[in-house]
Image (cartoon, rainbow, N blue to C red; front, side):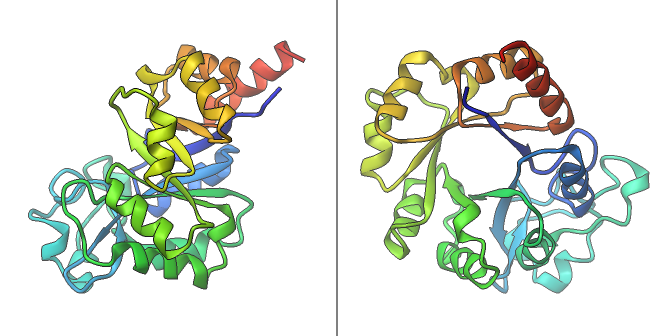
Amino acid sequence: MKKTLIYAHRGASKLAPENTMAAYQLASESGADGIEIDVQLTKDRVPVLIHDENVRRTTNGTGFVQEYTLNHIKKLDAGSWFSTKYSDCSIVTLEEFLCWFQPKDMVLNVELKTNVIEYRDIEQLVYDALVRHHLLSRTVISSFNLNSVKKIHDIDAGVQTAFLTSTKRQNLAKFARENGASSLHIKHRLLDKKLLHQCHRNNMPVRVYTINRPSYMQKCYKLGCDGIFTDVPHEAVEYRTRFQEENQ
């Protein structure tokens, strides 16, 4: 039976502030197979890890990521909104994360946050960073923005890419492939046997987000999804172990 890989969504983001080193460290300790990160660009074009285009929700700052220099954005408190014990957390650069991640026995999903702001050259900057750290072979680069997927494919057709979508579409696997994606990342409500078989017939891995409920985890494991993204990787690992024991 296929083993569904577990990606910690923004790290172990139910246990620590999302996209911080604290959340990534907990994800590593949880037994998750991989980590999912979100990348935006600062004013001085440094890739940083934060989900929203605006810093307001997850820091003590206001305004857009692209309005901050790295030096300025690094001074923000990125943890107190979650808990005062994380007040020392700051926004992480892609470079800092990759230095930490490289020796780990884990896989990586890099989501390019270009569906609202199309950051110039973000695709090349992220690709170059992954090359420097010898991580291309265990990384999937995903985006809701098909232009970003195509750009990565044009830079290097051998890179694993994924089209992120929450929208139903006829022949979704074919559509994704024609736009440079080698895999499909779908919202959980789109998951069904037909789509999964369609993708697997076309050698296209399917990963599902965001899976936090045990019943959804069981469904993904039973159907043989290639991966899930979850805020609670420790629970997902526990339920996968239980599922595997019951279905040996």
